[in-house]
Length: 296
Image 1 (cartoon, one colour):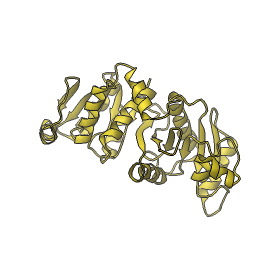
Image 2 (spheres, rainbow, N blue to C red):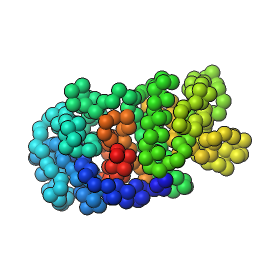
Image 3 (tube, rainbow, N blue to C red):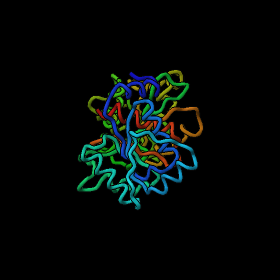
């Protein structure tokens, strides 16, 4: 299994033909990420955005776009989003990456009935993180798509994450269903929900819950708390019970620790890189590489 994002980027370089379509990708971080992706032979790109905004960013930052990055002059966010999605659904590009536009408009285009990237499966956001203290990549899900998933949706969220992790070389996906405690508590309804899912099991995935995060990822903490099971201390997938928890958890990794992160939406016909508008170019580059490696 890949151990960090350096290895993921190297694996992405060994593939060929990746091309990212980026609606409203006129911001500095998006353009810088595309330039880095081109320089590292990870992907080429096409940006759908107003020409004037692109020119302003290039003039202000001094970024030089290589010939492998195409610009399409489109004035409105809605048009940029739908044309970028059309570019991916038609096969002209292989990855959709969110630029400087609101999530609602981006997802509306991505899920468009005519040109969208739906498959009929649940779409879920996965943040793959590599923290300095950890010896492995860990997926955090779902912090971007489903506000309060049902048990059936959680099963598909876990399956989406397991599929991504297996494409990263993980032989045994181990999903921890996270809560504040390891026992069912009537004051914490997610504990009963997660206990029920864990009892039923999920095909192809080792699943355990409810688990607190320390007992899920740290073997010593699991031993001290006398938590046993197939996932305790060894989780490589961390599942939260709602979108807010997943979003806060993933962003805390990014902004409060020295952690490498890449994020994408799984369950669509093509990888969708959806990050915060404030995310840095390195995070966007990691996410592009993640999409290239897992999208084959």
